Image (cartoon, rainbow, N blue to C red; front, side):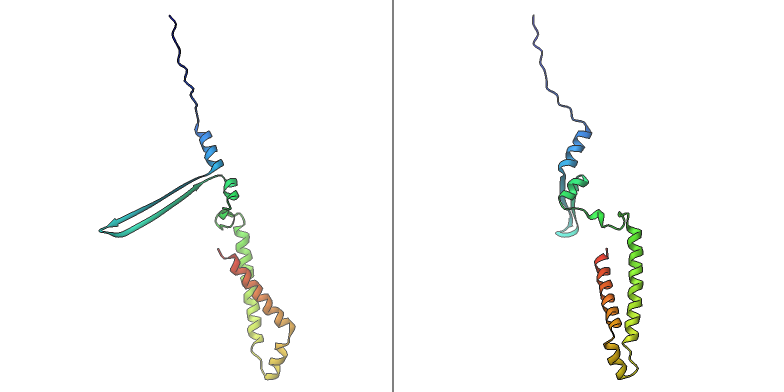
Length: 136
């Protein structure tokens, strides 16, 4: 009697293989949860979850962690730089305020044409623009 043996092709996939595949390709999970009572929406939660490797996320243009002050290694450096720039703005604004208060009409014409005051004003504007771009 010959017994026919049945062979099964069993493909085993371990958790590491699945995780590697998901991180390599990326996966998006989206869902909406709404809680209503008598046709009145009380709570609405929108869930958008992206699971991907850092390389895949950067390839897709997602890199928010690079500018997040809580995740960035440059947090203390940026805080110190911002503090210095704010102090510099205050000093420049004080100089502008004192320059804007002429003691006589003749002094006003002299100060208006003073290149160092115009330069101080331009520098204050540059620093203000820098601070606006760096706010989290």
